[in-house]
Image (cartoon, rainbow, N blue to C red; front, side, top):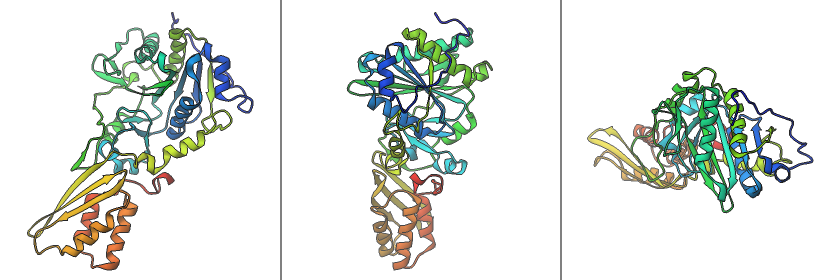
Length: 376
């Protein structure tokens, strides 16, 4: 049983030039490996998860990866970002969007949030046991804390407020289960960004299930990120009979984690973050003399597949609508290319004030084009 206050101390990681993660795991796997990221970049930390899953034969033991990221929204593999987030607000706040390779719903990360990723062989994959590590660690720090795991694999406080959500990825031989812990997250930002800014959107993408949330420090100020991180590491060893120390890991270390930089670049890319969105449609309307203008856009893999505009008879020249819709088809569903379509139309036919409204109605300027190169 874990003593209250027992800690797992961080030690220096073996020289990355002499040891890869795979060889480290072969040497220490039976005693458990606990890694703590030195980065707060969400793409880099997700890339570490990917490389561990792809590179390490986990049949010899387990790995716990502990990490935190600066403000970001992370959506599940099969989700629609326009449906899950207020992308315009995120751009204003400088909050990037990431798509992880596991399923599940959208989550908000900041430095008040601790992330724990449990890696095992597929045969030893056990989400209940992993959640027992989290609840056990919290109760060690705060014995009177009313915290428990639910049937949905969340952790709730006082039976009502969610303090942890989780998602998982199962491979042929390995699996991982990642969890969040809300210690002192910015709940106002969380509530604001995890809310769609798009109306008229229809999608079969996996929707998130909203839940009331609470920070652990609201219940007990001792449950800060550093204390929780150390307690989770200690409880992991106690639960699985391991004795591994906490090893710092640099997500940019190619020698220790071959391919990690390329993995991070792929996770930043527009084609992954937005282009992997399941097919969806958007309908937008605005008033015009004699009625209203309605525009329907269908988007597949982040690219406009079809566009149709309907307007009151005699108000909208058919060739204007046809030309505008034709110019949009094949463009990415983002401001830069929507504006390009606008310019293309302007070079060939007269522009009307409704055209400006139409572009803004279909595709508001959600994305700060200078936020990251991946979005350009």
